[in-house]
Length: 287
Image 1: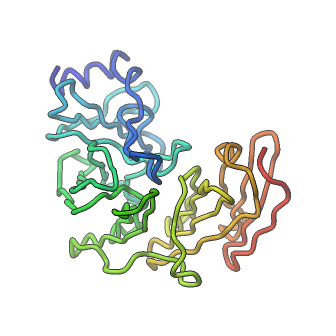
Image 2 (image 1 turned 180 degrees about the vertical axis):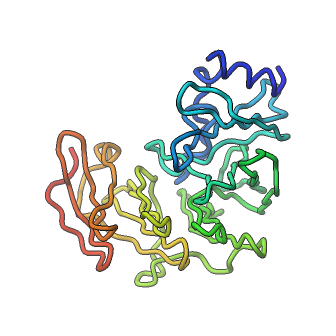
């Protein structure tokens, strides 16, 4: 089956329905990996969704812009190798589309494990869906976020040589093509080790702040990433034994982004985080 026949399959509904998310987190790590088919990632205006579709040989990937209404393939392209749409959380938050809608980032399909030697990302122009550049990194990395000006790509780097899965957030400068030397940490607690799995995400209206809810043994936390300022804040939540229920929690922003609201279906508001002071008001814990 060729790239062209895969795209024909989308229009007839034969291929897209059969594709599922391909995890790349290895042994329960912090990244849900990349998506093949599925819902893809939507443009900000909601008119199209970008999906990545593999050919049976695994030697090529078809990338398509599919109209949200009607499912028509608006444009498509193909590139060598296996690639997918980056997933930011296990709750289904797909990302990789630049804020101006002109670039699409894909992640390689190679399974990410702490012992992975090379990680690759591909940057495409959405107007043509042609490959612009490939980012190659030594070590095990996964997508985390992208700055609205497309100057910085944020990645999860798996730390090798640890008994449990640990990681750090790294910034990749797209202009210089290099990793920023230091990890992105909460400057209030620079030595705290990050562990956990991303559950839900909310992004500020200007695209600067990426808020991610993490499940973690003991107590969950919110990771607030300033994608422009290259800094982060970790906000612990006062919830105990919420390991399963935390996956039902979703994030939203209110008051022009000054309040991050954590909700659960049927239970309403669970907590509010003040994004100016990072103080938490907890009403109840998820169940």
